[in-house]
Length: 441
Image (cartoon, rainbow, N blue to C red; front, side, top):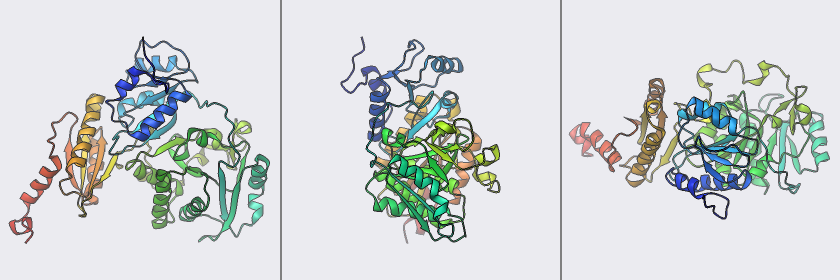
């Protein structure tokens, strides 16, 4: 008989998770899932279909196994993948709706992924002042531009701040201007913020991010293209870092499409700390006139055509690669760890060949590399760890690392790694230098 803890989790699942390198933030998300959907239950083909479970999938199922798991689910279930960065789980993810992720960190060097059949949360009444809605518009457009948004917020009794701002281009708010406005509002208000573009209408209180209690929330068009039209920022340090980093990147590239910049910010921040992200459902990004808009929480004044579902058509294809199944691509490291070394020398470790390796072996190699760097950084200021399942991924990661003047090391899952790995790498580099340089003369 399975024994359950007082917090609703069961011993079998927690014992399995004990070896998965989950961080404290990821453990908090697991505890929330167990309270919301049901006790943690490790997946096996013998698990009987019933509602109210949080199913933990540690080993990637076969195609038939993924189908059996999918058919056993109800809308009262959630599925958790502790090794969400591994492409071996992509097929299972493709059958489910993405709910959220919790990023990697030195404490927990894996991406925790969770999803299910469809969003279904308990109906809880939250205070109307628990969330502050903000929006900005070019001062050249006037208040008539936000008339419908203002009326909808007043009708729902939600606190809000709608402000005109100066813009570089007439009638257009750039990513840098939007990020600067949201950051200013975040510093001014004490509540979590929900930013919406001014041409939207709220038909219901947008309580989902509050119920989930996440750091950051955004909607993804077509399953991967992040939209900056609806953004949620909680009151955590991770949320502040997300907002600050977005502002810095957008200020450096003020004319770049805002969806791309928020995507790059998310990738950077979620590789450095366990950013708790919720992917907003389509009901938070409905298009006026489309099926389902009548019952949506937020309706956007967009043309309901396929052409309008994506980014600027003129934006370069080479930097618009999809986030495959909610995980970072080869150009983006899975994990970034800074050391206390004042030098500017960084090391990129490419973990290649994961497509032919057992998921647990790959996970163990990620943990071994992380532990080796935190134990002895060897004089490197930063570790950038990239998971590259295929040769093309490894090539892209290698080229990106060399452009950044990083030292590049490639290892394979299961390869023996000495505890002083990074010290040895630094020593080998010094041995290849001319004698007078190696000795610091």
